[in-house]
Each structure stands twice: as C-alpha cells, then as structure tokens.
Image (tube, rainbow, N blue to C red):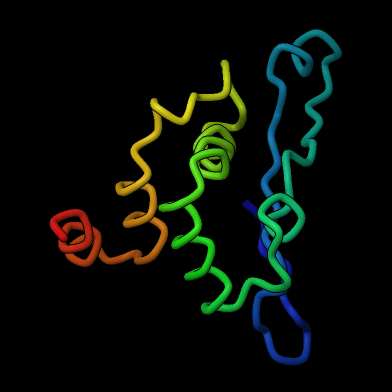
Length: 110
C-alpha cells in the first residue's frame, strides 16, 4: 500500500494498493506494479481522515457487498470474490476500526 501525503501538513490524502502479476513479470522479464485500487474511489470516501475511516469500518459492518469487496481487495483480488456469506463482517469491522489487538478483541466480544 502506498500513502499519499499532503506536503505541507504530512497528513494522508489517499491510500493506493498496487499488485505485481508475477506470471506476467516472468513472461516479459519486467516486473510492473499496477494499481489495484485507491481507497477514496473504491470505497466512496471524501477523504481518509480518522472520521472517514471509522465510517468505512462501520459501513463494513452493515454493507455485505462492501465487506465482500474490501475482503477481496485485501487479498489483491486473488481468486473469486467472496460471497457475502463467506465474509465475517463483525471481524472485518473490528479489524478496521482499531489497530490495537485488545480493542479488536473487545469489539468482537460485544
């Protein structure tokens, strides 16, 4: 993941996920990183402020299609996109709302 920062404030502006197609790189002899998605466009965010990221975490809890897309993106869109039934929305919500393991654990218990 690449983070785009505002040069003046050093605050994040957007996040970008890239991937490398290893089979293509081996076939051509040249590795090429390609954009998988950018957070603002992919998840309908106006910015990547803590408030917006918390809103995204909350949406992952209530929007099965978004949770499925987010999960697939986490795995670089490898394989088939998971169905809504295959995604643990509570775990995904808890994982994205905090980076602290104990908070994620408490979240899953509630």
